[in-house]
Amino acid sequence: MGDGQRRDHHRRGAPGTREEIETTLRRISGADVRVTAVKTATRFTDNARQADRYRRGRVLLAGDAAHVHSPFGGQGLNVGLLDAVNLGWKLAAVVCDRMPESLLDSYTEERHPIAARVLANTRAQVALMRPDVMTDALREIVADLMSLDEGTRYFGEMISGIRIRYDLGSDHPSVGRLSGNFALGDDCAETTLFDQMEDGRAVLVDATDGAASAIAARWDILVRCVPRRGGASLLIRPDACIAWAADDADTTGLDAALTRWFGPAMQ
Image (cartoon, rainbow, N blue to C red; front, side, top):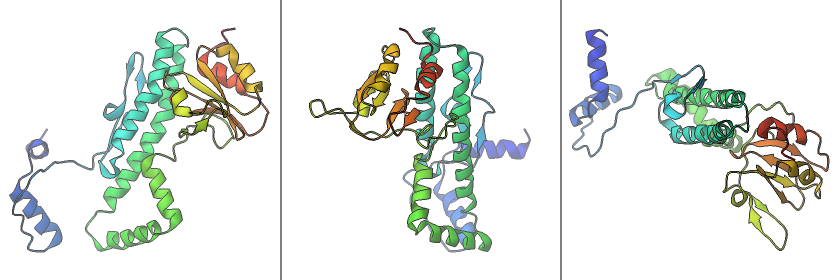
């Protein structure tokens, strides 16, 4: 590490001062900015890095150990939590000898592309902050796009993570997406999806009048079956990812999905 790199590394770890902030603002803005006091100053960079893979043998990476990026959009916490939720139930299944170690490979397959997209959109946000006339023009165009309903929806879903979809090899538009909470049960037993997921089991939301539940009953220790009045039938993993879906009474593929994620039938 050269002298210049050492100075830069030391400066990154040092607290921000009033003088430094004032000097930087004047340099960038060209205005006679005066900073009279600083209550809190935190440094961050536009550094963006990602591990090539999240698993090597018994070593697993998640959160900032797997990917780092600028804090724009406040996406880091959500991404890290979703890493942990995706990995946790899979690791438990392997540790308890219910599933082979190969299940852990799906952690990288599913979560790596998500973090890569977060790195891309934070890099784009950093690029939009460049103080030059070309970026000013680009920023105006992006602002115009964000004023449209479709633009607002696109950027909102991107930043919030609602657009997440894992590639599980299904053509159904719901498969691979993370489910939100919704009401379940019949008139005598109202409940919600998240209520049913509290103990860590997967949930089969059955709108097939019992046909799907009859199949899933062979995995009853790991999968809870809950009836639904109309709508799609859904197999929802413990991380809230929809692993199988059907819009009618057809249960094709359900047995394969149960075996893929929860192992051979227990009955």
